[in-house]
Image 1 (cartoon, rainbow over the protein chains, first blue to last red):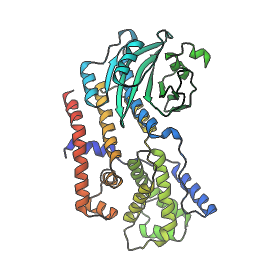
Image 2: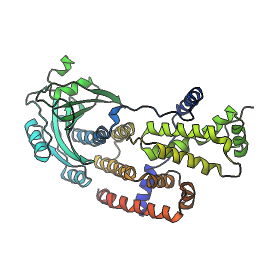
Image 3: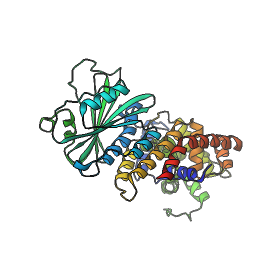
Image 4: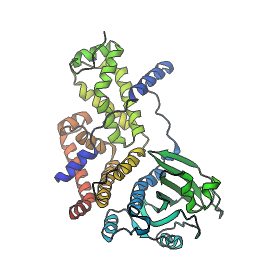
Length: 223
Length: 192
């Protein structure tokens, strides 16, 4: 095996320090085990949000946000699309196809031409929103579309995947946020609508509902 | 008697005190092995929450069964087997959230390297994680014991109860898969 790969493996798999809270967790479990007579307590329950499909979307979150931020690092007015070389590398890395556009109709058509995903975005929206483009990535056999955009100077990504068995199968565009989460400063909001699963990831200093202005121009006032 | 948190405390004495249900000795033993147990659990599961559950189960099992540990056996090997079994017992397969986001933020905070370099490194990490997570449990454990614990083939074979040749051949297969998936990335990095 080549040395760089050996080094990468050692780096990726390197030992880590146990969290400080582990001792308390063990002690608590010991106490519970003594009280209940069980030798081993069951593991803590994890939320459904950690189901594989959502987890796969979060894998994308990293690439999607990184890509979006990379695109918008310069001055907003001077922002340039990803270079050919960067696009080629991203494609080579199986990260899927990228499309740079600030036109919601073009983005919608591009995504639809490559998947069964339909991302309907209104043509008129808040002036704070600046579309950057979209990506299509295949993960675990499912296609996921990521729309990168800016809310002022903050970055956001909308991730969408088909989910035939989800609720709200009708044509209505009304939806309820099914889950919100903040992790390491990144706000996440998820919902299902028209047989598609949506997640917005928002990394910024402003109000998280600002990211909803992608489709709801009055979101900041309404939410 | 309160034991000092030092490695000077002999292993046999420490184990003897644990077998006598000395709670201070339990704490010293925990402190001595917590990082090792947690690292194996984390690298195997890829999930901090799962890793804490596995570590908790391992230490509960350790504390409850240390009375049956024979002094002439290798304690490290015995502990390795406990954590390996706890990993295999952990049925729920989950993926991490926080490390990914932490990694993402880390990339944003490192202006020294180019954006493309960062993309490549991030993708390299993702590919390695993806390959490791796609492995069968025993194969994945071999990778963890080899690269997290830096154990020899013979030691891994002893812990997993299989021939050293099996360890070598399984690692070889993993290396080939990784080479296939990462070769393009390495090429891209060299070109930049």
